[in-house]
Structures are given as structure tokens and as C-alpha cells.
Amino acid sequence: MHSQSFAISPAAWHPASSDGSRFVASGHTTINPPVLRSSSGRCIRCPARSISICCAIRDEALPRLAGAAVAGAVEPGQCFIEEGERAADFFTITAGHARLYKLLPDGRRQITGFVTTGHFLGLATRGTYGFSAEAIGRVKFCRFSRAQMRRLVDEFPALERRLLDFATNELAAAQEQMLLLGRKSARERLASFLVSRTVGTASGDGRPPGIDLPMSRGDIGDYLGLTLETVSRTFARLKAEGLIAVPAPNEIIVLNGRALEALATGQAGAV
Amino acid sequence: MHSQSFAISPAAWHPASSDGSRFVASGHTTINPPVLRSSSGRCIRCPARSISICCAIRDEALPRLAGAAVAGAVEPGQCFIEEGERAADFFTITAGHARLYKLLPDGRRQITGFVTTGHFLGLATRGTYGFSAEAIGRVKFCRFSRAQMRRLVDEFPALERRLLDFATNELAAAQEQMLLLGRKSARERLASFLVSRTVGTASGDGRPPGIDLPMSRGDIGDYLGLTLETVSRTFARLKAEGLIAVPAPNEIIVLNGRALEALATGQAGAV
DNA sequence: CGGTCACTTGATCGTCTTCAATACCAGTGG
DNA sequence: CCACTGGTATTGAAGACGATCAAGTGACCG
Image (cartoon, rainbow over the protein chains, first blue to last red):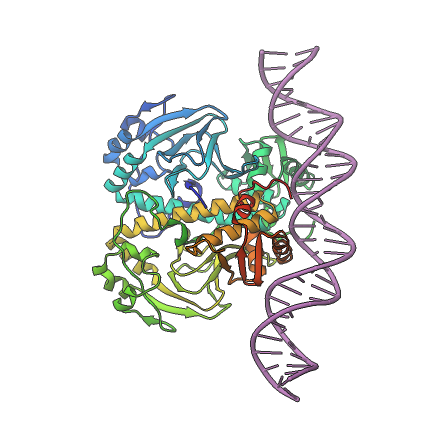
């Protein structure tokens, strides 16, 4: 275990995590193209406002937050965090999707997570990032320097609790992924992946949930510990069995959610 | 992703993690057999004193800590945390080894980590534990109720930072393990496992480090996403190649650390 | 219309799993 | 002192799942 950093997903932890912690909602910044000092007005209209760590800061203190943040953006395929580099900055994603990954010297890649609006990343254990981050589509973010972040944390203790909640949830997700990578079959992995992606997609009424997949088959494979061919084949099989429909390569419709969840949790009779 | 909790390993993070945080060393409690109120005197002589989260609390405040902690112990094979149960308590291991794991309905098991003296565990995301914990040998621990823990955290803000450091390091380890489970071969997994277990075993001088393996082959397999047969076979092969010696099933001696590390990091020429 | 890129599909191969037998060790009781 | 027992580890042979290699398809774009 060498240098490490971590990212945090807003998906799971939003509905209260470490009990007894209540924070006044606060905001973040939307961005204009490259490095741009963000104003507090931008913070309050930020799409990450209510779901990121920023909500640990009171409305009145928004200017402090906006003053510490620098908005930025990267183009598709561009790497904005590199494993092993000095962890100088923290990031909050405000738009787009990115993949986080670790590489082996010979090029083998393990994607440790996909992140999107509201995700926080950059906390490091040895002062260097523990993974790389690459934009899938265009990605916008807010950047905080290490020093600025420390000042913010000192000033707003609630921020630290928020970070701990974040980390706890990210850790839980990582453990779930370890179960997937260590013990699930290819079908179960794909099913788990789809189920976890369905959660955010509450279509309200009973209509079958459509899942958007901004990442490629290769990305999915590297996330699930499979090859892109196996991912493709397994999708084809789930489709043939009527569990899902695939109107487009990057769109999946869940037809039999019950069966998919059974598969995901390892309760597949046979087949 | 359902209910989750997490554990924290002292191994990696001890030499300063999130920069700028300095805590006065403090202590913990040693234990006498079953549930026993621990005195502050016991805390100060606790083997987990300097390596656990307890070092976030000043010496003078030790009685507060000792008052909140209840000492306990479990026998080999006994389960003291059960996945899905209400996460009522936090634990600090003060002696022995335990395995943390998640199960699939059909019995498949993924061990997410092995923990020992100084490890903290119990932080949960949805109020329920995210994994089970089972004693390997006899295990002693200190237990804090959720309410007590909250009070301690409120009283000692440094504790929260300490917890965040813990979580950050645990997360980094989990990501490293994801790389292992998703992308490494059986040999590479075993090599990684041995290397990570070697770190703690600094024998000082240049003598070959002996690694103690308190867990069974089956446990190692369930930790590395392999079967116990593959673990055994792979050990045999590493031994035949002169990389390790295996004087006893639960003891490994590293003969060629350089080659083992190369294997662990995926730089294996061929073979 | 040729080129690129992502995805799909097919055929073969290899690693690890599975099933099964054997070896080893500690503890127990004859 | 030595057979007996239960648990763990080792070793062997066969099989399966996913990887690898390779070809084919379709969409988008210059």
C-alpha cells in the first residue's frame, strides 16, 4: 500500500449517515470554462450545492467557500488527477462523469469508481493521490488547494463530520465491490452494476427505469474485473433472457428488475 | 449497496496521514475477561494506546475515555459483529486477530480484511454493520456504545479528524484490494498479500522476515478471491521457485523479497 | 466513400475451480 | 507407546468460466 487518496459518492449517504449530525444546507459553484474565481452567487446555484460536502457550510458563510474554490473544466479523455502525484488539490465535481482508476505497470487497469456531479475527491493518505481521474465526457469541477481546505475544515468543523460520512459511505461501497470482484460471476457482476446504477434513476411511476451508461464497455469491464468482450456477451445474454433491453449501446432498460436484483445478490437458481 | 460499516487499520496511517494534524498521544484499555468497566489506569497501559484512535485524546482526559469503554473478549471462531445487525457499538481491538467478511446467500464469502491490535471498527452508514467480524484466535476489545462515541467525538474534535484519517487509509487499502481482486493473477495476489504482511514485520537487521499467518488457507483464499486449493498450490510454487520458505503452515519466510515485490506490483517478466 | 472507433460475435485457449484422494499434525484414549 | 479421530493442508485430474485472438458489423465523420 503506497500513496493513496479517495473519492466520495453522494449517492448513498445523502439520507443521513452517522447519526446525530444535522447540517444546514449550503452550496457550491457552477463554472465557466477554465480556471475562474467563483463568486458566492455561483455557489448558491451550483448543481452540487445540496449533495456535496459543501452543504456542511451555512448559507451566510457561502462567500468563504466561494472564495476558496476555483472553478475548472477538462475535456473528454483528459486526466485531471494522476496517481502518485502530489495531492495538492481537492475537487468537487459539478458536471459530467469521470472514471477513477489504478494501473499496473503493464497497462492492466482497475476502475475503482465512476463519479459525477456532487462527488468529492482528493483526500490522500501519504500526500499523494491514490488513483487517477479521467474525464469521460466534459467535466466541470471546483478545486480547493490543500491549504484552503485545511482552513475551511478548521473554520467549519461540520465539514470534517461531513467528510467522515463521505468516507464511510465510500468505504462501504468499496467493500461491496470487493465482494463483487472476489466472489461474483460475470452475470452477477453485470446485474449488480445495473442495479446500483438504477437506484439514482427513480422514474417515479412504475415505468421501467432507463439507465444511462456514459462509459464504454471497456470501462465497465475494467470496473467489474472483466474484459469488454465478456461485458458485451453478458449484456447480450441478459437481453436474450428478457431481463433488460438495449435500445442503444449506452442505454439499458431494466425489464425484470426483480430477477436482476436476485442475480445481483447471488440468489440465481441456476442458469 | 445496503447497510455498511467500516473498520480501520493502524498499519498504514501511523506515520502521519492527513497533513497538519498532530494529536497528543493517549491510550486505551487492556482487558480482563468478559464485560468489565475499565479504569483509566488500564487505558494508559493498553497495547492499542498509541496506535488506535484513542491517541486523539489527551492524557489528562483518559478517565473520560476509560469511562466510556467497556472491555470484552470473544473465543476463537466466535462472531462479535454481524452484518446487517443494528450498529450499536464501536470496537477497538486490543489483542488477537479477527476476520471481517461479507457473505452471499449461498455461502460464498469475501473477507474484506484482517484486523488486529489497534484496529477500530464499527462506523456504519445506515445504522447497521456492513460486514461481520469473527475472532480467529482469542480476541479482546474495548467497546463504546454509539451514544458514548458521539459524546466523545463532541468533546474531543481531534477524535473526528483521527477517524477521518483512519477511514481515508482504510479506503486506500480497499482500492488497492480492488486492483488485486479485479486485475491480478493468483501468484500476484499471494505475493501482494505476503508483501503487505511483511511491512509490519521489520526485523531490523537484514535477516529474512518471517511472516506469521494466524488465518487458515481458506481465509486467505476468501480474502484474495481464490480457493484454498489455489492458495496452497501457489504457495507451493513460490516455495519451489525459492521466493519463500514455509517452515510451518502458518509461518512464511521471505527469501527473495525483491522478486516477491516485483510480482506483487505486476512486473513479472514471465513465469 | 474510405476511415476510424466502439461494439458484437465466434473459436480457441488457459487459469483457476471443482471434485477427490492423500498427507500431516495435534489431541485423545486404548 | 501407539492406533484413532478430526481438522487442515497438500496434491492430482477433470472441467468450466472467462480471457484471448480474430473477424465482422454498424455509426459517425472527414
